[in-house]
Length: 151
Picture 1 (cartoon, one colour):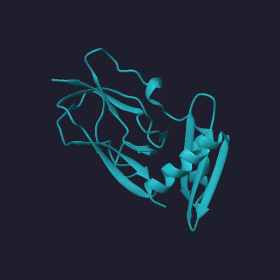
Picture 2: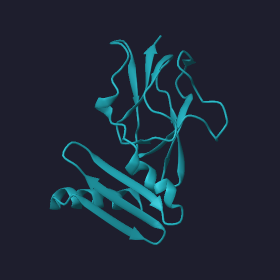
Picture 3: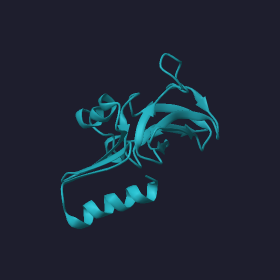
């Protein structure tokens, strides 16, 4: 499945008013669960079930739930739906920590989506003042990941 097919599935769920929809094509599975306040999209391969079950048990980070630390900070938001990782591999040091100085193009984290690892880069120079998501937590499109105070 590609992103346009996933968007069509989500739109079909919204248009029809149903609360839950699951579609499977080959090894790919997309599950859309709609609630009164937020929508949750879980994307997983058919084989490893524990990874697919985790987003249901954990709260999903959303943009309004993670305000900036101060009025001068800039929020770095997730450009995609996926799973947030603070480091390139388990046990490796985080790409950035609170208090670190960052520059444009510097990798801040990884968002795994559909088995692809997407590096999220900083767009401003500054200092990391907050991290709003824990490693391994699912994130939605537009969810605040970091707050950066520009220099």
